[in-house]
Image (spheres, one colour):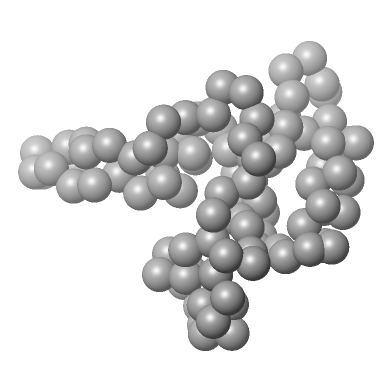
Length: 95
């Protein structure tokens, strides 16, 4: 489930030293104003997405990638298709 205006897949970019590196999906989303909230499965995923929409946020869901997690994700990695990473950003016109 993608909201309108979602970015394209990650592309190569130059870092401060001028060498090319792959921009992660999280970096790309952050550059477009999306803030990572957490990883959920159902029914909590739908509940959290609805709650964020109700309080004025756009919601974007990304497939879960265990290799992108900073902490332990062993349990989640056993069923990666079951989980989604939830991102939000303030809807324009909402204060």
